[in-house]
Amino acid sequence: MLYKLIPPSVVTATIQLPASKSISNRALIINALGKGIYPPENLSDCDDTQVMIKALTEGKETIDIMAAGTAMRFLTAYLSVTPGERTITGTARMQQRPIQILVNALRELGAEIEYTRNEGYPPLRIKGAELKGNEITLKGNVSSQYISALLMIGPALKDGLTLHLSGEIISRPYINLTLQLMQDFGAKAAWTSPNSISVAPQPYQSIPFKIESDWSAASYWYQIAALSPKAEIELLGLFHNSYQGDSRGAEVFSRLGITTEFTSQGVKLKKTGKAPERLEEDFVDIPDLAQTFVVTCALLNIPFRFTGLQSLKIKETDRIAALRAELKKLGYVIEEENDSILMWNGERCEPEETPVIETYEDHRMAMAFAPAIIRHPNLLIADPQVVTKSYPGYWEDLKQAGFQVINEG
Ligand SMILES: O=C(O)C1=C[C@@H](OP(=O)(O)O)[C@@H](O)[C@H](O)C1
Ligand SMILES: C=C(OP(=O)(O)O)C(=O)O
Image (cartoon, rainbow, N blue to C red):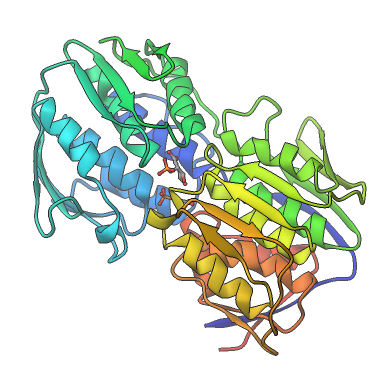
């Protein structure tokens, strides 16, 4: 499928954003471990959360979590402490996303996990067991999801759990999000040093819990505001004191001339029109915003240097390669350094007349390139349905904001 887009001259919209998939999937695991009586409210309707709900409720022997990294990692730990024997698998890409660091850590605690195809990668065969041991060291520089997965089962272990993280810790706000939610649900879990975390053996308590809207999804609306000549956008369901690290996107966008006003319902975006000559930012804490800012800065003609992108190669696709290939079609030559830095010094190439933006089974490629239509008429988005991974209503919301979204077949 191909989508052609036509932007409105003025974007005016009030958008009910989807709920955060990161919070939804943590609340579901904690709720399952705590045998909660209050189901989490406002769960996301996205694929990544739907696969998690199915895995926890259907009781199937083979669980297919499709492309959901959080579901794969969190369920691997959860199934290791849950009676029964199951196979957990996912898409072809999921079978290329590494999981050895988590499996080794769980095995050290006594978990019974086997690789059914390739060593180090899903699918996994997991037999639930009572885990022993309470102190392990693992790498913190590949994916924070391994750490979140281990932390969430910590309260269920007889002696609790202490994790020592080696290397530069990436995606730290996602670890903090896990700790925050665990604490909300009555667990004792906290950093004890800059790279160690301890969890007490104390069961979760069930509480009513409402899930916030998704700040990563909000970033595409900030992007639309930044690229549009005129925009009045209100985003509902975002909290001022957000648990989500991606709320920092609001501060980075303020440097691109988009200010945020918090209301009782969410946020209103305002354009000040000011833009910097150049943007430098470290994305190690906010990797999911990288595509948003790479595309926005290129289209606004703002040279940039973005560091901390080392996790992008093992996400839904190799996002470093995907960004460079697709921006080239729009006439921008983006450089890469050390597998972890993307830079643009203003260099251009001949843009394609009708560029077809490939999305590589990556929701964020579709969502970050769609707003580019405001500055680059004629582009088409391939396989637009990929957005269902985190934001199923994205195209409907664009229509509500005055965009024409035409299915070109
Ligand atoms: O814990 C989470 O909810 C997530 C952690 C991050 O992954 P990494 O820790 O692998 O960077 C992020 O990219 C992902 O979208 C969601
Ligand atoms: C990286 C992402 O998801 P996950 O790792 O959970 O598949 C994402 O949503 O950008």
